[in-house]
Length: 203
Image (cartoon, rainbow, N blue to C red):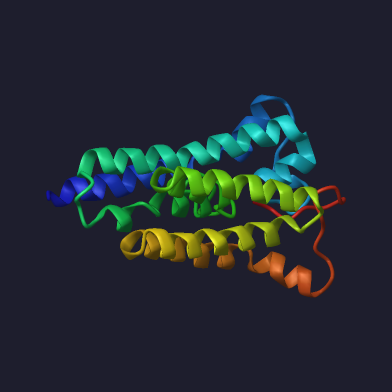
């Protein structure tokens, strides 16, 4: 495998993941900048607080598609038998978390990670998204819902897939725990908020 092709795949996935749709979509629609309200995060939950359900769904879909398209492109270029696939798949999520367009700041990575994993196991991720929505609906903290669903996805991947796919799911889960460390700190201090509260945890 040509090293330049591998590096190009990683770079393209990272740049695609770096596109800050959580900033661009609300601004284009005249709904403001989520970095100036609530948690200051550019993800779905904070956009929902600032701009409402429809705009937050658009942001979620855009961030989700970043991961899905990056995964599809990587597989198409390198081939499904390449041992490098599962090393390169997280690059779009890392781009979302450390966006080169936002001075290496970004979102929590939940939606983009879901897009990457959807490419591997669409049925599991579809169920996971529905479960997340249900948990939030019954007033679970959004960040706790994300971490719980992430754990269940990882467990499912270990049982049904194993190998590199399970390792990828575990890596993404650990990354999500790290990106939600501020939410965990606020939760322990009793300062974390639900979806309909005045402030929000970010996606």
